[in-house]
Image (cartoon, rainbow, N blue to C red):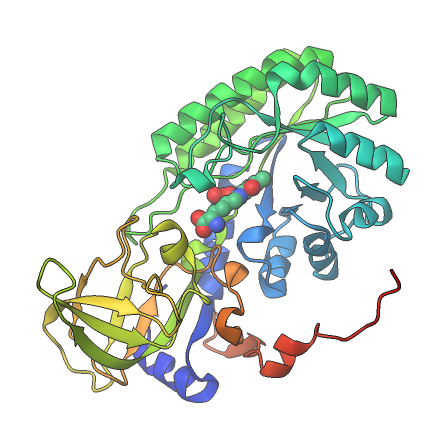
Length: 428
Ligand code: LLP
């Protein structure tokens, strides 16, 4: 997304800082990319909406014929409110949750979404709830990848899914419960290297193929998400032709193994939305500390956004590009800067590149009053923001292709934060 400093300054004056700004054109381009790689017979894309559940984003997906992978009852309800339909065959909305928490079971029962179960007890949960319908089974194929271990969703250290070795038992339990298995699913991780992704998905399709003869009701196989986004290089392109061929080939392999039509699904999250949004903060101060980095001290640019807004650097050591927009439009020399936020933890630092805390980055010498942009914040950005330190979530703005800007969620107030507080006597 191209930065327009003048517009950002006007938005900062109107909406205050920090704020999120989505770019409709970039989102539509990413949606078009995914439509392209799934434009083969029997191949369908979902959106892993956990990455960015804003209604406006969901509506763009819905218009483009993309389906949904949800992770909670509330995500399903948000998708339905945005225009997706329950009760469809094949299911437009699939619920992949490790645990049926809160309203999740109710939502499955009421709204005809496909539950994608990842542990044996979930079959019993469905039986007890009186569910009658099809299920999907999430498999842990024994391997996975992630940009950090915490995001590696396959293999021995991952809690997700049912191992192929235990599949026969699950199949038996599903039969006993009268739940036809309509889908086999795996999501083996987020943010792998591209070649690794291609190898892993090929291997995954191969493993799935060997299971198809036992599954007479199977309609589709999902290879999950994980299409990477390059956070360092905005010019870097994912080889879309190669992905398109990969998915078409995987689908053919599955059809050949089953001897009948089997659909192939993917459900990226990050790829659709990562570059579609920036987080804009204001530099409030610049200060030096003494002797804390190899005797040299560090220069800190203090900004009004923190890990309550964008948690990825603090949580995973993730790299996000940063642009300083000088308030006077001047060209400034680059100096090593640590960008830090308002919160009560030393880990509230954006200039991260792995687990190391203080990694100064060369940036144009910031001054109080400058705007500072954190790029590629659309995936797991607002979605993972919090109210820690009783700070309200920053507003989300939406830049349309005609240049108009709309606020799609306002800044949270103290009243929003206190909404769920109560003093109700419980009869125990
Ligand atoms: N499908 C399932 C079942 C998932 O659990 C996920 C992500 C996806 C699809 C989408 O993966 P993607 O295409 O976005 O890589 N908060 C972390 C990422 C956690 C991903 C969890 N599951 C981050 O900020 O990098």
